[in-house]
Image 1 (cartoon, rainbow, N blue to C red):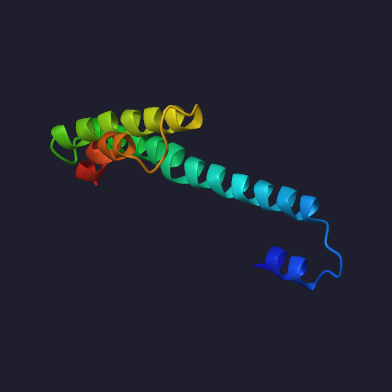
Image 2: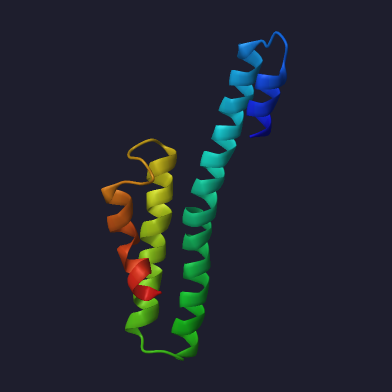
Length: 103
């Protein structure tokens, strides 16, 4: 919003600089959305599933499902990062199903 207001308020705006700023802000948003929900979810799920598996606080199939799901979510993040498919796709949802079931 600030970038839009500055563009509108400029007397003779140079659109190239505003387009470059907008593209960089969108890239930061996209990478943050990739790293937060996918990579960190995979790492976090692996850690607490391993702890539950070793401590035997819950039935064994629950942490095994969590560890399997964390690997799949992490794999999904890598595939999105390398452009195999988009983050909001059918494959992304399918790879996230085991983590959703674990949660």
